[in-house]
Image 1 (cartoon, one colour):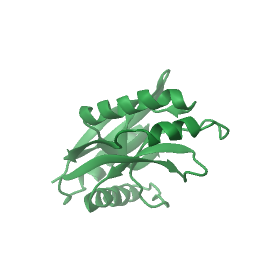
Image 2 (cartoon, one colour):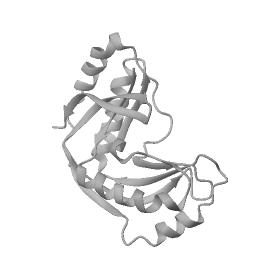
Image 3 (cartoon, helix red, strand yellow):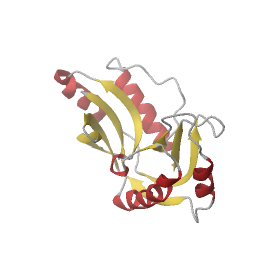
Length: 183
């Protein structure tokens, strides 16, 4: 089983991002993410043995003491940087509780033998990936610069989820295996 932990986006934010992607897609030949799959990842777990699924669920259920918090999806950017782009993303703006949730998720999964992430936590929504570094991004950059707004909505995070990621003929399909309230 391929697993990750994250926050779901409300339909209003997905609708706004869907309009953005539909408008930008013709500007560059990139691998655009299905908007329905967008989420805020707090921990990528990777392969996990199905017989140990309950152990994972219990470890994540032990995450307590993080209150619900507001998240805004505002801003666009490139990883690793605008001069050598590989990933086009939308920014996730959130208070310290999001970083605390990511750290608590790291700690809970580390106790089960999952390696900790070595890169700093950088919450974002992956909108597209560069299939080829030779792709001309000038039209996309012009389209982004001409956007009337880079604010795609906000919401209150009240829970987080354990997801199963399964490859299908049309790409990855995500299924929620467990939901954990923030308190």
